[in-house]
Image 1 (cartoon, rainbow, N blue to C red):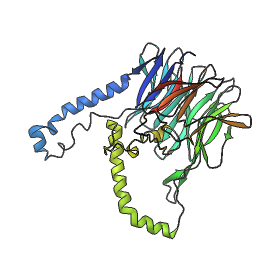
Image 2 (image 1 turned 90 degrees about the vertical axis):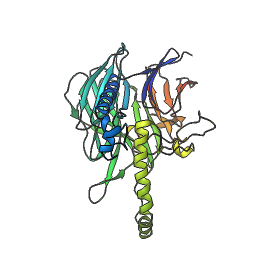
Image 3 (image 1 turned 120 degrees about the horizontal axis):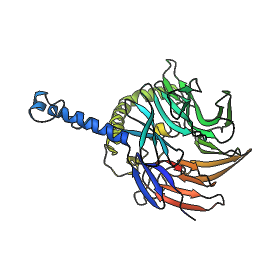
Image 4 (image 1 turned 180 degrees about the vertical axis):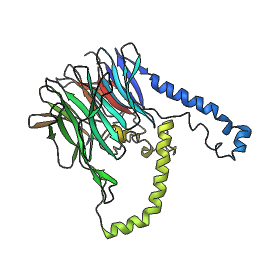
Length: 383
């Protein structure tokens, strides 16, 4: 069977594969941000070199190249019309939505510094986007905006973590998305998330309906066909809220210094991975080869999928077999594939899915075909 065309995110970069050839797509926005950072670094290089560094007492000299490696994160990808791609990108200061046309020209459609905008999905009419708006209080809402324009409207509200919207094909303007309730402590601070359910929203009337939920499971990344067939990833729910007890409190008090030291190390380790793609510890063990921390806000509900893989077999699946791709027709559910981190539905009815290391095509007849292998595949889009 012919190989499908696919776009995917791998190692924080956008790739497109057509006719058996894979090419890396460079973002003009990312290049501009890095060039600006490098220019700033050159202007301030006197602080880290020669007499300037000595004059500054060695403070700046101890932090070389700290500005020119600005993290530019690609946080969402979807297909547009006429061979175009749409994706969301962000730095520590601003986030936006960009369009890459078939000629390779990148256009910034929307940007903001007030919140983080991610997971853009284009309506079949090609005129409206559904997105996730992440706010600073660990709350996120589903929003819509025109493809060309600045009118922005949030459709969901409340203390919930709504994300990854997808339009449902058909006459009605419906959106499916995953949603989890936010847990907070007595002081109102974020304490955790409840299990993810799948919600369906009528963008015109505002009617909201829960269409799928399972006890003890997270249901993620929903897609629904015009016929009403629902696809999603199902995984075990992991609560981050421990049971309260006197023994547990005494244990927490004794372990506090060690946990604090570990937290400080992990803080710098995350920044090292974001800036350089490498952890601070150079051990080649499986513990050091886990999911990139950025996955925490891209997929799932802040769950830590253990993407450890064997050193002897780099093609081994990166996510557990408990991460299942499920198809629901009416009241019946079936497991389509296991060890699935991301997936998409193609126009011919086939399913493209990835375990983080490979992309596989599953035809409507049930035939499986490996499309490609890459590192840290975060998202898959059928073209």
